[in-house]
Image 1 (cartoon, rainbow, N blue to C red):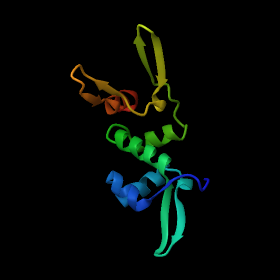
Image 2: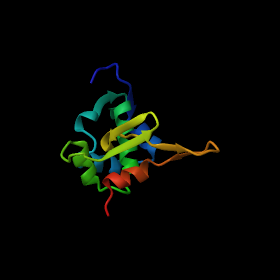
Image 3: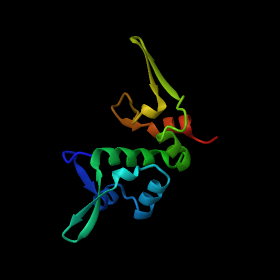
Image 4: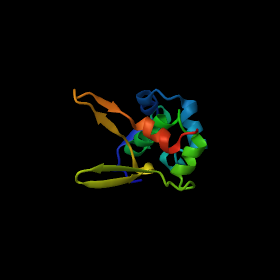
Length: 132
């Protein structure tokens, strides 16, 4: 990792997402967060752990959005390329069809006629990866 990459401290990450220390390290053990993302640095108060901010925030958001609908072991296998991701989302409009792999989808929103935006990402992920 280059020094030019913005880092976030473990403490700030846990506070930002309301995640416990135990959850973070359980995700690490399950392979959801790569070991190399845990960057240890000496500080005046001892040693602290930092993460590449963009990578870890995106990963934590993915885990949090999927954890109620997908087994963490299944999510880990998918993130590590052990599960073939054949799930696809296709959108057909008068201008053509766009197709996206399930694993590439980060967020799906629908805006109603009144302008109210609804996040339907969890529902889509449940359709792709959820248990029946």
